[in-house]
Length: 93
Image 1 (cartoon, rainbow, N blue to C red):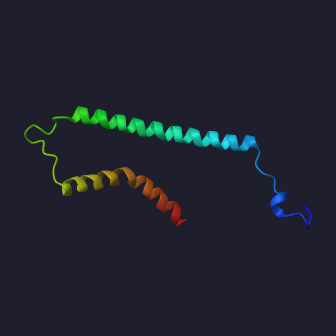
Image 2 (cartoon, rainbow, N blue to C red; image 1 turned 120 degrees about the vertical axis):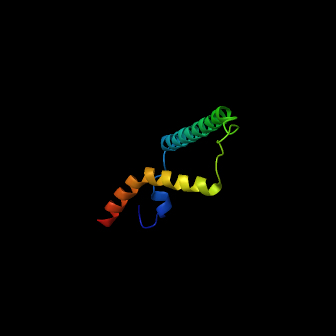
Image 3 (cartoon, one colour; image 1 turned 30 degrees about the vertical axis):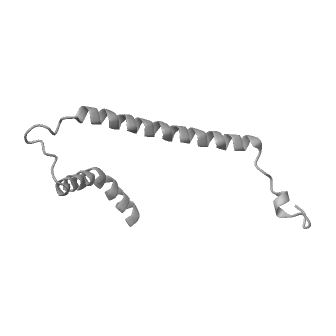
């Protein structure tokens, strides 16, 4: 690059091969996301079919919102405690 040459003219532009590689990577990632969303939807439909009628018997009340939130908090604490503990240890030094 010379003093008279603007900086934007001297910088190399990405080649066609680089852009096609980036486009292929984006397409692959979008395809993976679409596949995962489709599988999650299929799992939801299967679960709904298998659970149909499970709350029809005596003593199968699903509980109140407070009960659900309490159980959910305990479950999340049990699953995530180890990871949080490691992260806190790393952050401490």
